[in-house]
Amino acid sequence: MGYVPISLLVLLSGAAMAQDDAVVVTALRDPVTKPYRKMVEGLELFEERRRELAPEARLRFKVLPRKPDAKVEGVELEVSSESAAVPLPVEENGTFTLEHDETALKERAQVIPNRKAGTMTWRADVRTPGLPENTRRLGDLRLECEVGMEAGLISNYPPGFFGWLDELFPQGPAYCRREQPRYLFFAERPLWSVTLVDGDRREVLSVDRLYAGATANAEWKKKLAYCDCEALVDRAYFVPLGDTSWPDETLVVLEYM
Amino acid sequence: MKRLLFSLALLSGCATNPPEPAERPLGPGEVRSAAALERNFVVGETSKSDVRAALGPATAVDFASGYEVWVYREPPRKEPPAPGAELVLLFDPGGLLAKTRVAPRP
Image (spheres, one colour):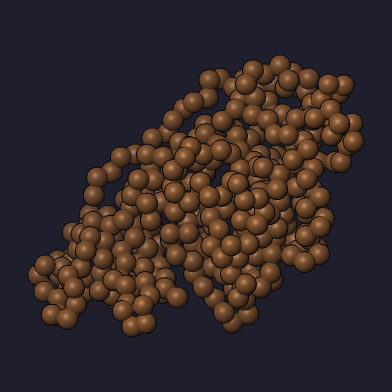
């Protein structure tokens, strides 16, 4: 077995932290941006689908490091349009909320962090209150996937990457309702196992569902730099979102390394 | 340790113990009984070289943190058709076994 250490491609070129003034954010060259309109569409989908999937849940969005030395700490966000640049408060864990703003929609605003393109990635964060820190709810994850796909949060990948990702992007939220969609979730810490629990029924997910499927793909390391999981591969997992034998109330119990 | 390695070799179906005629030879990273092997490993004591010597090469994923996950799988079942169980081993950055699990395949 030949070992090659994970090649940590350091593509950050000194993504200098912006100063306190949020306007500085817009001065960063080549920032990673998301269309505000798409994120609002994600908000709307959340409101539409929450009754079915996660009635008690709350939605936040989240920025995550995409490159190994990218830091979420200190990230600043703003909704930037022709007439205004409105700062978005960001929690220490990288989460933030978004409000519906007609002017920003009309002016085709962008959500812009003070980070360069390719250094951060995005996800929806849907959580029903009251669960232990290491426990997610399957309905929350289902909705998280749908919102993430609707809002266009998943970064682009080159053709042929891991094979399965090619089929992910054109399909929007419907992709999440396939039996085995490969939408990546990220745990708070490096993962050891993921177990689905529905009453007496328990299933420890195959290791092939962890680490972005690395154990099922001998070439995973060569293409890691293209995955928005590059910095979080030891936290990445996917679950059988579309397997309706697991109800929305199913608990997804994470055990950490 | 010699006793451990010998017993592991028996359980893993290495070259020292030819497989039953009806069974196909084990491929790289395959073992006959994931659950039986797991009982022979000791968290905090068994090293990567111990496991490699006993079971041969694993499917391995190494992380920037220094942790490594190794996987051995039972051959797929024929009746009914199903993938075999998997033995998953976590090694800490010092190369010692940190966690184990056997996941029976559905």
